[in-house]
Amino acid sequence: MLKTIILIGGPMKGTRFRPLSLEIPKPLFPVAGFSIIYHHIEACSKIPDMKEVILIGFYQPNDALTKFIHSAQKEFKLQVRYLQEYTALGTAGGLYHFRDQILAGNPDFFFVMNADVCGDFPLKNMLDQHKKSPASICGTILCTEATRQQSLNYGCVVDNKDSHEVLHYVEKPETFVSTAINCGIYLFSPGVFEPLQQIFKQHLQENYNYDPNLPSKEMIRLEQEIFIPLANTGKLYAHHTDRFWSQIKAAIYANRHYLAIYRTSHPERLAKSKEDCPTVRGDVYIHPTAQVHPTAVLGPNVTIGKHATVGEGVRVRESIILEGASLQDHCCVLHSVIGWNSTVGLWTRIEGTPNDPNPNKPFAKIETTSTFTSEGKLNPSITVIGSNVTVPSEVMILNSIVLPDKALSGSYKNQIILFSTRNPDRYSTRNPDRYSTQNNELLQVVQVTPSCVTWGLHRQTSLLVAPPGGLQRLTSFLIAPPGGLQRLFPVAGL
Image 1 (cartoon, helix red, strand yellow):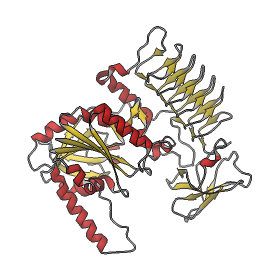
Image 2 (cartoon, rainbow, N blue to C red):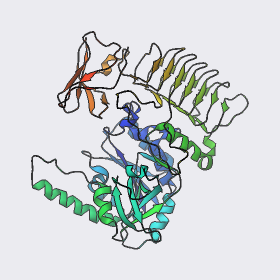
Image 3 (cartoon, helix red, strand yellow):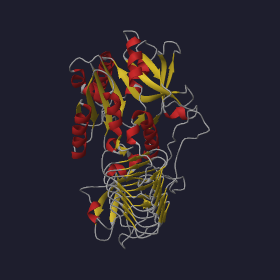
Image 4 (cartoon, helix red, strand yellow):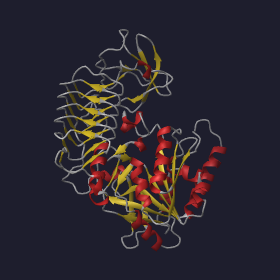
């Protein structure tokens, strides 16, 4: 009997996906036509004797998550459950906290998958190797190759080339250790709960020795507190793969590769050019309920979501069009995400800049680029149009991020469109939006008056206040944290 645990995190995660993750939890964001964790569950369902999938995170239960679970259970004929942590417990704390649920039914092994990765998961191959390993084995780590420089951003694994026993493990080392990196996919035997119990008891004892200057230790970090001690003990092994794998840092990049996987796994999902149908170039997924004009040209690497409408002469490339979106006649969408129920006007061009791995470097991974340059300017990236946004006709939106509920009036380049005139109630202290400064400090609305919106650093008292003239076009804000004045990212409003 087998089980799978998918670690889905919580609402303070997924900041790279904003504003998309403002609407639904990041693990439910559709990539290649299906939620991110749908691809995880689908891979698990192909393993013989897989009986249950458990989602662990600290999202509040919501309609979207409940609906997804019911749909997944029905489609894959698997028990799927969500277990909510009372607080963020780290990559291993949730496993130990819900150990009785995981061990119920006496599973022989269980997979643990991070929700923020995508790939062609070789779970069957991992299972075969795990079964052939010595009986003392606690876990198997899925590994792939990275460049020497990029390996510093991941957990690095040094293993015996013959037995694949992990001899050394370092999480995000300061100097080069190995080009074999941790993929965030694991296979464990029940014996892994012994070292987890030891770490839990150690943290418990430290909490008893109360020190008001130290935070309570409730998190258990799988990589630092379990893998490092298990290395070179004969209990931890590595399984290497050359299949596609990536962290989900950019929806467009993940979309491209899942569509490519469909060529062999689900060719029926890919659209084909036919008479009286749109022209399809490369890998394209069109939901059966979408309406696409025969003169439209789609692809490569395009996903058209449920009930989306694509008008006459529209061109879409390297983009995701989400549910209910409308692309009016002759508009052009390149390297962009168009949000739920948004409208792109006639002859409008929406374009972003891709952030792909260097094709000239073998094993290169997608880079994590900051949202802002050192001068506080927005780095070029894909364009993201939030939900319920209206983009007028005959304008251009280039390398910009538009938050939900906007009615734009012109063209924008390299800007974050922050304020809304369509739905002012969105900016309230009861339902605060949160955004990041260039130093990754969280901002949220703390006061709303007819003349200004006041923003504050999350869990601090420093404030940022809009001018007395009310919500208007702004070039920059100043914020006064304890360390003094600094620039916040440039924003634009209506």
